[in-house]
Length: 551
Image (cartoon, rainbow, N blue to C red; front, top):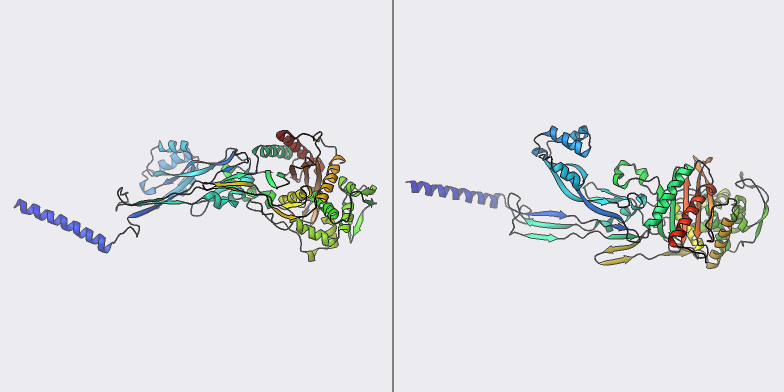
C-alpha cells in the first residue's frame, strides 16, 4: 500500500512538472529571440583623452560611480536619508524629495569617487547600489575651460560634449558602444554553458591639440593680472602661429570650474573668442591700409594734409585727441592712429573695394575653427551701407566681428598674404592610426610685397608710438592698438570701450601673432594703456620660452 502511495505521489509530481513545462512552452513561449532567455548589456566605451601639443594631458578619465537606490529594499528610510545626506553633503529635504518609494530604481548622484563609495558601503545601508562609470578628470584644472568645454548628460543618461572641443569633436571622442549577450535562466541568472556573445566597445579617439600648455599658463597669468590691474569686465588673449593659424593659446576670463560646471550659468560657457562679437576699433586700420596698398591706391610715403575734422553728411569725424599735424605720411596715419587719415585712405581705396575686402577677410562668415559655438559676426548688406558706414569702417567702428575673425584677417597681412583656416586640433589618434590636420589656405588676399610693406609700417607704428612701452630689447615687434567705443541702444557710450592690441614677433619672420583684449577697463579706456602693456609682457615671456634671439 505504501509503495502504491509513493508511486502515485511521484506520478503527481511528474504530472505537475509536465503541466508546468506545457504551460511555459505553449502559453508562455520563450526563445532566445524574444529576449526572455537572452539578455543584452551595453558596454560603454572610454571617452577619448585630450593632450596639448607636447602630449601633456589636459583631459583624462577616472573611475567614478553612479549612486542609486532601490526603494523597495529600503528598511529604514529616515536613517538612509540622514546617513546619505551627511556623507554626500546634500540637504535632507532635497534627498527626501528625490526618493519615491513606489519606484524600483532611483538615481541619486553620478559623482561618487572611489573613496566616497567605500565610505557609503561601510554604512551597510539596504537599498543602496553603485554603477561604475567614467568621469572626466582635468590634470590642469580649469586652465583651458573655454577651449575644452565639458561633458554633460543627454536625456537618456549617455554622455554628451558641450561647447569647445568636447562639443565639436563629440562623435570622435565618444567612440562606439559594445554589447554583451548572455543566455539566462527564468530567474535572470547566467547560464554558464549557454550563449555568450560579446562585441567589444571601440573607445573614443584621442585628440592632440595645437595648444601649448606653457603658453596657455602664460596667457592666463597675464590676462588675470591685467583684469585686476585695469578692473575690466572681461579679458582674452589669443596666441597663434600666423603662418598656419594653429592656435597656441586661447584664454578668456572670467571662466568656470570644469569640475563644477553645473554650478554656473550658460553665459559662462560661451567662449568670447568665437561666440561674441565686438567693434574692433583701430586694430582694424592696418587691414584697410593693406588693401589700399594692394590695390595700388597709396604708398607708405604718400602724404595727406591732416588739417582738422572732416564732415561726412551730418556727421563729423575727428582724431582721438583732436590734434592735427598737417602733412603726414600713410605710415604716420597708422603711428598716430588718425581717424581722419583713415577716412582719406578709405576714399582712395573706394567703397566697392572696402566692401569687397570685408568679404575677402571673411567677416560676416564663420572661420570654421574646430570649436563649438562659433558665430559669424555681422556685416550689413551692401544695399544698407551709407557714406558714413564706409568712413567709420576704415577705423573699425560700425562693424561686428569676432576675435578669431580679427586675428585671422590680421595674420594674412604678415604671413605673405594668405587667409588661413584657424584650428586647435593637430592630430586625431585611434587604434587604426593617426590623422594629421594640415594647415589650410582659404584664399590669397595680399601679395608678398604688400605683406612686407605693411609689416614695416607696423614695426614703425610700435617704435614711434606716443606711449613708450616697456618693449623687449633687440627684437623687432610690429602691432597696433585699438580702442572702440561700446554701442548701447544705437549710441556710443564714450565712457565704455573695448581696448585691444594686436602684434607679432619677430617682425622679419613672424612666428607668433597675439591679440589681447579687455572689455570695458575702468582705470583707462585706451588700448595703449591697458592691452598693449599686457601684450609686451606676453611677448617677453614667449621670447624667453622659445629662446628667440636677435638676427
